[in-house]
Structures are given as structure tokens and as C-alpha cells.
Length: 310
Image (cartoon, rainbow, N blue to C red):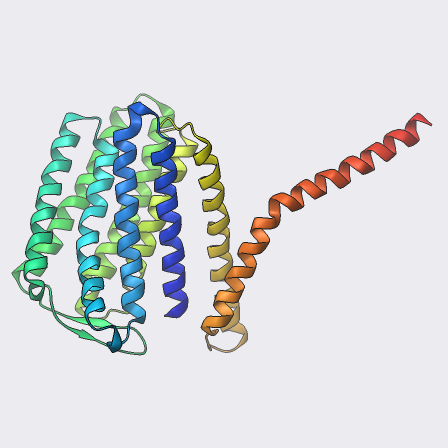
């Protein structure tokens, strides 16, 4: 669970940086949509970090763990609402739909804060991963029904925009969003709302999928120029996002190879952190190494030119 928690926290940082890059780099005309995207990354970060902390928490955490659980349920409500706002805010029906779901989300959050026992009654600790004793009552299934209405709304909105758009560039971006959101929305519904009826071992897959999808949204913003972005912050934060993404990919490969080589035993927390720091250090040196390589090549080219002139 330690590696999973580290990966989730790292991905959440990537998600937040992507939202910050879009918000800081957006032009005045796209500031409202970029704000919704930034809000989605904030809620996704809270959700991802809360679940990662929940998985590794111990009984000594006491009241802090209750707050973590509360943040898990509340932040999950507003991620898809913010994404709906980002996708459809330019349209009148998009504003109406977003505000309706936002108000419903506030109602759900308020009821849950007042009476958390409507969703869960106890926190269970285990070395293989913590879990909750869920209260499978009307409120829980209403909570599921809320997402069963929200996720299709986002998908139908994207489909509507794909069919109505005359721009190949915009259609390509919306199609990428549609595929990513359909996959992550379905995974979150299954692993974080339905599967916990039997097991909590896979709840980390939901936030991982959502965070990955938001990074895909960030890619479409850059690749298909969905928003007009002009800022040096965009270049800097995009570079950080790329570096950290490469580090996360390396850690996943490292973990798989370690388990395969040592017959299922997991690496210690110290080994995981050391590897992560080393790969980040190496990636940060890449620009300097590229400059050094270019300098050496220029020296070799100059020597070859001098020989030809002689």
C-alpha cells in the first residue's frame, strides 16, 4: 500500500500542476473555463490524497482519519461537476446543468457533514488496506444515483459537442476527452461505489483513473488548442508535469520488476523514496545533459570543418 499511496500522491501533484498551468496561462476569454478545470484538479487532488492517506492510516490518527474520510466523499462529488463546467460552460444549457448539479452536490455535502453515519458507521484497520463499514441505506444509493446521472450528462454533453462542432481540431479534442472520461468515470463508479459492497482493495484505481484522465484533458488543451494559453508559466509547469509523469512511469516499472525478481516481496519505503528521488534528479539533469551533448557535437563539427578547410 505504501507504493500505491506514493504513486497516488505524485499523480495528484501532477494533476494540480496541470490545472494551475492552464489557469495561469489562459487568456481572458477562456478564464472561466480554465477556472472550472483548475477546480476539477483541486478536487481530484484532494480526493486522491485523501484515499492514499486512508489506505495507510493507523488507529493513532484518531480524529484526523475522520476528516480524511469526509474529504474523500465530499471532494468526489465536485470533480465531475467541475469537469462538466469546463466542458460546457460556454453554452447556456451547460451553465444550467452545471449549476443544477453543483447545488445538488452542495446538498449532498451538507447532509453528509451533518450526518456521516448515513454513508458509513465504522472505520476498519488492516495491514492489507483499511476499509469502512458502509451504511447501505437510502442515502448511499441516492449518492450512487447522483453519479449515475452526472457521468452520463458529461458524456452526452461531449457527444453533442462532437456532432455539432465543425472544427476537426475541436472534435479531436472532445473525442479524446470522451474516451478518457468514459473509462475513468466507469472505473470510479465500479471501484469506489459498487465494488466496496464486497471489497475495498481496489478503491485506489478510481482516483488514479480520474487523475490520469485530467492529465489527458491537459494534453488535449495543449495538443488541440482547446483553450488559448499564453504564458511562460505554462512552459515551466508543463515541463514539471512531463518530468514527474516520467518518474511515475519509472516507479511503476521498477515496482513490477522488483516483485518479479524477489518473488512477490515488496520494496521498503526507504528504497521506494530513494529510487523516486534519484529518477527525479536524473530527469532534472536532462536539459543540462542535452546542452552538454549539443556543445560537444558543435566542437566535433568545428574540428571536422577545420580539417576540410585545410
